[in-house]
Length: 527
Image (cartoon, rainbow, N blue to C red; front, side, top):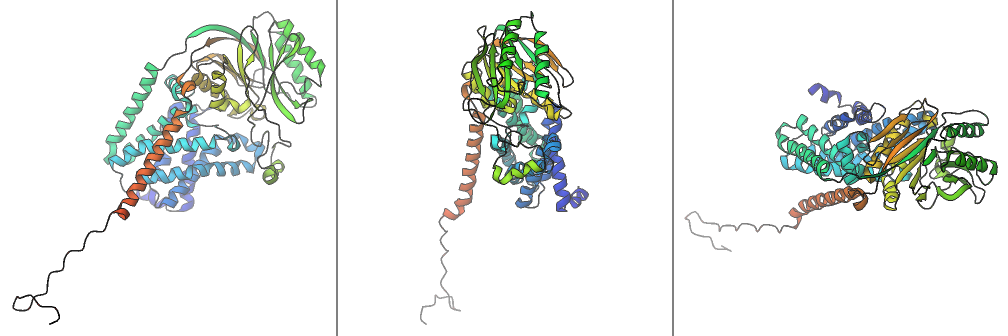
């Protein structure tokens, strides 16, 4: 231990250790998918922060660890944003600086009391949730890499998601990490740590036993068309031709809806009536409607939009959803007047795309109501929750990750749909141009197999439907409210403890005994 402490005495070595420790949780996400590792992945980071010699150093440890986490989670952006990836990671990593200060305050190496450890099991997960809340804002990149989303294939965790969303999973996972860190580093406070682990297990068991399970009421057949990567001149026309070919193979297979990926149509259908006619003919040939995604400059209003458009046997039905939440730098540049230089160092958006104004639930035919989302909108729990609350029976995400084919991004993106399905009790279809495409049932369980990035195909899935309302849809993001109350209670308590000595009236001075003479009699004043 002394050797380690001596090695960490150097600020640069300590910062390097914080970056590496902060990056560890990424191993729990796809593609490695070591989901179990997430329950101990924060322990080295917590153990490092609690040894910080000062509160200022703990702030730096939190910041550097957050930088490592964000850089590891978004490392696949490096070929496109280059050095700007490090800038983004540094800015987002700063959100963990206050969390680092909290860790040291509660678990300082001087030896926290059992009461302080018990408080840490509530306050530190709440502080982490506040970080996830802030960075979930669209302008900061959205909720990509939320800790709880690493549990997308763990059935008990999906049950928790139906109760409190991915946020409840994050809260309990951080609590487990804090408890394990205490067990490893603070021997004198193992009782509250064990109690915290027990409480987490009880909460998970209660959700498993008592949270309502979706009641399957019907099934529909939904087809996904995945044309694969197409590059070079005329790629928009060639992609469309391949999508048409793959869609024709679905004729006679009884699909109730066919879904194409994001940017599957590169021309506005108002400007290209020939495309609209070909899509209408496809709808007649397959006997079902087709949900396409148009990425083009609109003919009826200025600007470029990404739009989910439903096409029937007579052409576009009029059902349209314009993407509301755009990818920073990929689809627009925040504060372009200040950050516009990002286009000179990477493949940032040369022109900002326009935003839609409201979510839409579409009647897709055959009595099926769908809620479309585009690209990383599937990362936002509130969007899928709103669609379910508005009556969507199936959630549909149209995506394209062709730029990041050889990275972990396609698997990470596809896994998010499992969380959204479990949260809302609605099945979710994640249809992409180039993979990974996936379908999940109303409990978050996988339906069929993924369509990998190497596949150019179409597939039909039997999708179970449920009309039940999950607690998360009914009560919303209540874990955030609980975390805010915990933080407020702790802050009020800390303030009272700080002010109490100042508000207490000073103790009266003890009376001074009279001076006596050598003969033992009291002396008289003035003599």
